[in-house]
Every structure is written in C-alpha cells, then in structure tokens.
Length: 81
Image (tube, rainbow, N blue to C red; front, side, top):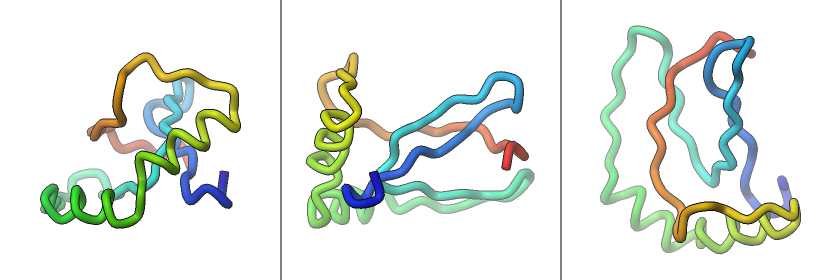
C-alpha cells in the first residue's frame, strides 16, 4: 500500500482494534487538542488525488467499500502501538 500513498491506521482498544485505510491522518495525544483546517485538507486531497489512491488500494486489496465516496473519520486515540 505504501506505493499507493495510503496506510492502515490502527485505532481503538487493544482488544478491539479498528483499521482505517488512510491517505492522510492527524494524530493528537490523549488530552491534547488540534485545530484541523478542513478546507486546506480538501484542497490537498484534490491536489494529491487521495480518492484515487484509496480506490486503487482498495482494488489491490480486493475490497469493496460500503459507502460511495471516502469521508473524514474522527477516531479515538489509543495506546495500541
């Protein structure tokens, strides 16, 4: 997936991890805050073809998404790593 410019991000509890296929992620430590420039991210997503990268990676993996388009996901912080 590295060659596609995406990665799997692990979120959630160690006993119940969630895997997110991501073209970009913003990590913030527990108890910390981050200001996210969504307009800037939308522009970057178009410029770097994130949607195409994600679709190509899903195809490589033989996966079919249940939603029509990629979306933004706010996931809980974890000490899983």
